[in-house]
Each structure stands twice: as C-alpha cells, then as structure tokens.
Amino acid sequence: MVKNGYYSFTRTTPEAFEELRVFFSNRDSVVTRLVSAKNQFHRWVEVVFPELRQVFKNLMCKGSLATLRLFSTPEELRELEPRDVVCGWKSLMKRQPGEIKARSLIALASHSVGSKQATYAYKLHLKQLLAE
Image (cartoon, rainbow, N blue to C red):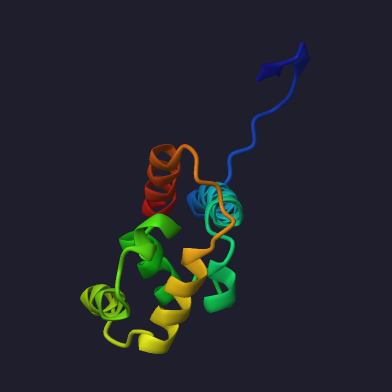
C-alpha cells in the first residue's frame, strides 16, 4: 500500500479486532454527543428557568425531565394549580413528586429571573434536547 508517498505492507487483523475497533469508535462518538446534549440542557435551564435547580437537585431525574416535557417555561407553570401539575406528573411517572414540590415550583416560577424572550425557539431547542 502506498500512503503519503511511502510504501508499507498492509496488516490484516482478525475480524474480532476489527469489530472491536469499530465498536469503540462508535461508543466514543455516542458518548461525545451525550455529554454535549447534557451540557446544552444544563445551559438551557440556566438561561430559561434557573429556579428549577432549587426544586430538583438533579436536573436529569425523572421529575425534572417530566416537568420540562409538560411545562417547559415558567410562564406555563404560573397559570397552573398545584393539582394540575401533579396530574401532569401522574401521566408520565408512577411515583411522582407531591403537591408540596408542585407548590414550590409554581411559587418559584411566578418570580423567575429566566429569559422571557424567544420562548418559542427555546421550547423547540428543549424539545430537541429531550429527544436526544
């Protein structure tokens, strides 16, 4: 084989090693995309709804993700009652956070300092991030 003007012998490797090389390469790209999506998700929360961290310590927990799927912006949460939020959670989770968390979430959303501009674009971006 001639590469970059140099002649070298081709080395044939067993099929198992070739498969391992492809699998590791694939895993590396999947992990890179996952880390990138998580970082974008954390940035989205910091920009749009930073108070969510006060209610859910782990943003990747089921309750937090269900909240963002159902009520993606603080403006949507302001208009709801705590029992409406709990009913929404029940539709997605078997064991959902209680009404106390729903009350605190609505109270924090009512005076959120997050971005109130370009909400449609932020909602679309969140939908894409949650799909990943």
